[in-house]
Length: 166
Image (cartoon, rainbow, N blue to C red; front, side, top):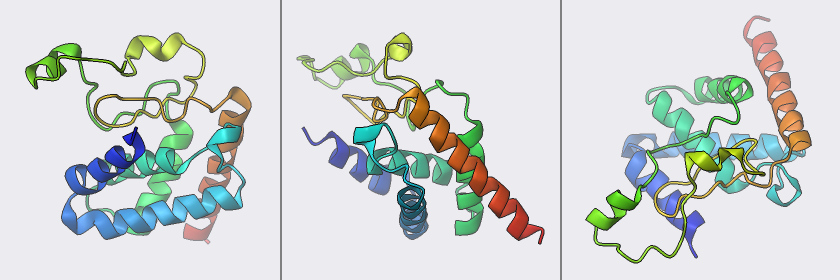
């Protein structure tokens, strides 16, 4: 299944304004570089992945459609270090069976992630992909990984604050 490709395509060409694509790409490069440098980039080991970072970067670009790169980067760390996890990070509303049936997709073979799934294991930091079938891209993040990711984000906030008011 090409869920990651479909989600990335939708984020880049449907959700984001054409004039903001370059800033989105640069934001994504910066946070991906940060996550690799801080060793919190490996979904297999309970950390962030490219898909997770892409969804998070898209959310920031949607929240602040005219922000500069440095502003968006600062907001990225502030918002996601203080996010009310396990409140899911969504870019769009979740698809319902009724929505899909209206579109003519009657044979629903795959189950989408649902809000009720939040109680299940693997939903400490739910980052939900766009459109059917929505999945929790961050299902591998465990309690320790979540703590380390948030700690590293908080360190970045301190560095930003120090540099701005230096």
